[in-house]
Length: 78
Image (cartoon, rainbow, N blue to C red):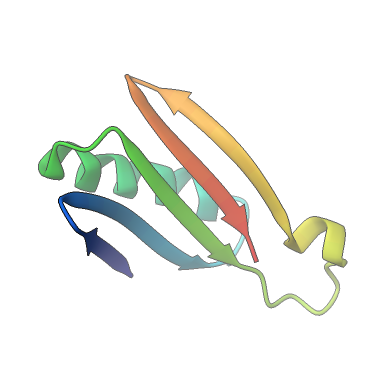
């Protein structure tokens, strides 16, 4: 699900995904990068909800930052 939060003059592109396997984050990054390019934004957020029962909290909850092609994407595990 793609969102664009507008707060004052700022736009915040956000992509929300459910964890389905190892392709979830790479595909989400690619999709969000496309949205960011369309919006002319250089910073975005990818939020991945991990509902796997076998995953511990250290695997589910994280924050990392990816920088590529002049874009900064914050990847947040939830």
